[in-house]
Image (tube, rainbow, N blue to C red; front, side, top):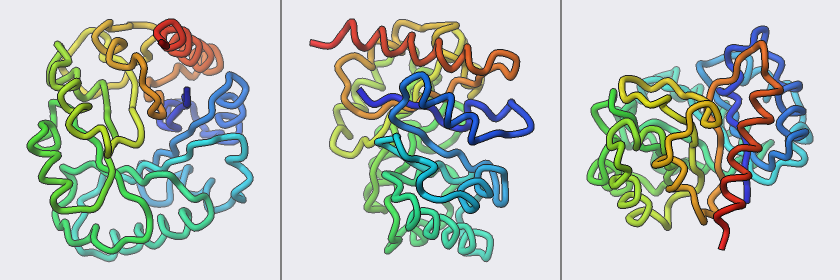
Length: 243
């Protein structure tokens, strides 16, 4: 199984120490990592620009999450795409993740030279929620999909939508985002699953061979402990359900 963390999980740990984060991820056994860009020129972008490709040695799956900005024809977007392309040339990301509700001009995503993937959205968004929404995305772009379990749960706690989406887009899904909602449906806050494990969220993971990225936010005062427990909790659950 391929398990890892998004660097978004450690965003509350300031000042940011991404080298330490990566070392901790590796120490617990992670073989995947996703670098989360919050905005242009943020600490993650600077870290990736300043460090050699060897900084991700040991990770089998490496992806990049693009910022949640409006994607229109603008200098800001063209500059971002140039940065992403340069980073992809260095790190060979498996996917560059975008939120479909932020796309205002789909033509921007034609003829890009890096691999794009669109993520299903939570219940606070107005697009990217349903199967029909995601079908529109894939009609407009030659792209893959990121399956966010917590986003599904915020829209349908029975997870029926999740199973239907998995079946419908199984050939497109390249990674899974995994976190908990802490029993609630009122917001996109990503909680650590080991602290509040919703069984419906866990069950949809069984038997999957798709890389899983943890998005639950760790406590700055217990960073290593949270990382170890989240990884161990999920690994144990998945191992007990392997055929």
